Length: 297
Image 1 (spheres, rainbow, N blue to C red):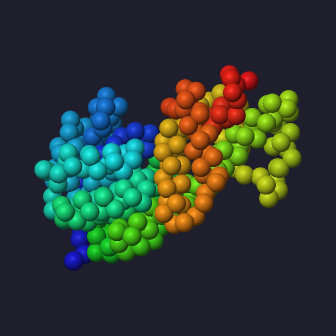
Image 2: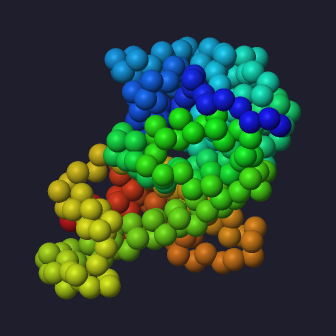
Image 3: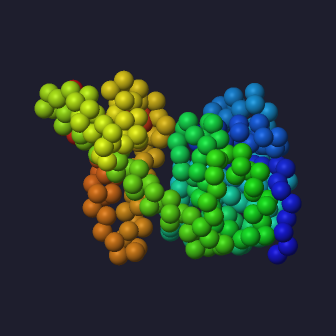
């Protein structure tokens, strides 16, 4: 495989919380960007940033150097790529950024091989704000010869790219993403539970923040999430229903590896209860509401 030239055109499949910001930054960097979303109206505003919105995945990928998938899960990514299949160019680079899990990555890799696509396992770490500002952390695994193709893509969407493998088939980047997400979700639940306990005991949460301030127990992410919760700002930077999906993938990965993940399993159940209570489309700190049998105080 010979080294290829940097991409000039990118198809973004999925323009939700993450994909919309990524598509804008790709267009602002000077790339020719086409975007598709299952609900077209959610993608339409991207036209103001120079993104061409298409009706079908096939229209988006037609002639693209790089296809970037950032969808809900692996099943959605595979279904969308199958819809795009008639227009996929053999040899095109597929940057698969969906948090898909290990089992789904096997199916995605098989599809890439079948369609002669150069697959890069490239999940991203970050939420809405980093996606909008081009400050995501890109975790990537893929062959050296095609890396120059995606450099302008990863540079546009992220502040840093960490290469962790030279083949997507081993899902090295996805494995790392699951470990990182397990930490992020556990901190979210710990914050939500501490806030709920403080509320139940009549403790001012500011006292908790003062107690940990400046010490090893302090945490910037905890402060951001607790602040969001107490402001009543549940606009999702990462939605509860997506966090529940990621928690399930983490538990499944642990089972495959023979590792019991009790906290992840309990966290998945908390997210499930929060979704059941009507908080699925809110920020994942809505885990807070899972601490109460009735209406949260």
